[in-house]
Image (cartoon, rainbow, N blue to C red; front, side, top):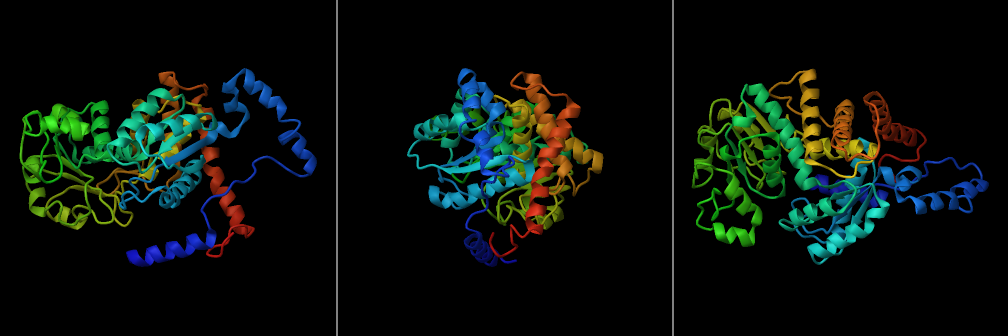
Length: 442
């Protein structure tokens, strides 16, 4: 379906359904007398318990399984600063994915915040209602500061999907791709094209995973080029883009300069998260790379180089952000399962270790099912991948001592599989009973 036709159909259906999610009871109500338990006077019982021990909110309310999807609307999809109201459809969509793929209840919250401090203040004020925070579509470099502050200051998991989510799935696919070509990622030469929220977090995860950042080369926009510690604008970066400054000091040991062709010479892999193509990366530049190169062209709607062109130029493994090509690097493989695992054990944090555990779980899942050039990452409909990933995250949270609960692996698998499977059962029942009508409102 052509892009404009998709937009038209989406507007039509959004207008028909008037929202993608709703609040539905999860407790039995067979008579109005039941409200004596669920509301007044009975609710005073749990109120008293939580007053004496606020942690009991995770046991006696839905807080344990509820995430806030928070955005200020300053960087929505590829549309830029569209404002909070226009961001709401995206946050609703995110909430739908949270529920359907991970069994997580998510509340879309768009915020009119004029500064990073104001946004941080709003999220901190919301903490008592939620078991986790998913930050979404916040402009760079503000998003880096907001995430790190909230990770330090809140006692629930905080996640920015444009950073951690993308990086987790990219790292998982990259580990698998290096297994396909028989090379060692930790010693490889990797080129990052664009250093926005996604690739800066990829850089951090490569570091956590044990890759040699001295072999990583970062290429930014024209006028900036390759980052390195001797860059003539280094002192300027410290002010205008601290993440560029940080990358300049930590990558590119040989101080290679120039642009993308110079960076790709002899590279084992390129991860592009820059601007839509085609033609951002040229075929002749792929030919400069090492044998069996790996090409991740992640821009949407058109990758920086089309997969067929990358393969014609010699690429062995190619991944994009699109569902109509093999190896889709899709954030939806990350956030539902990662939060499912973290919430199930009532984690206080979302650590880098938990995210690495998730990435490695996806690699193991793919290996067990037949790792190949066209299958380096699970597909969105592989439910057991989400179960394996969530279990790995929960186990890592317990290992790191940030979980409030301690649950055996067998019990974890049963709980998580049930929570992930429940929304599909509810959807089937709702469609069968005509509570949700296909194409006709609800």
